[in-house]
Length: 102
Image (tube, rainbow, N blue to C red; front, side, top):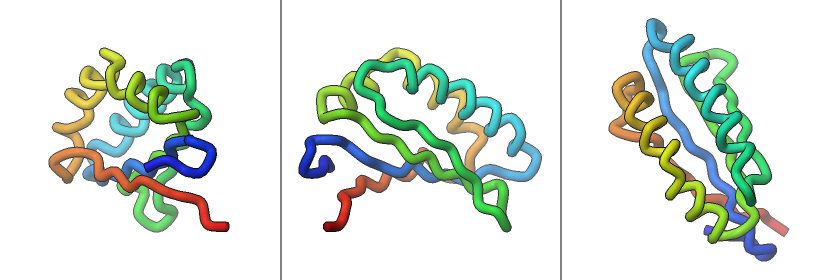
């Protein structure tokens, strides 16, 4: 869950429908501004798949476990998810925690 420096690095993945794509893009972009302002956030980068623009990936990095837990505990988090969940195909964002190689 955290790398050798203590950072927490993850990918959040979700898919939406073509009808909801622009709304989801706006929602995640706005939420990104909130997350980037959190203490301990090092990155919140949003990507879509070139060939399938309804697929989203969010690469997040937090300074350490405490910064990640603070992010999870931010009241903006459940408010954002309450808006996002009805617009995506999955029951919730799929999280993949990463560790650097080498």
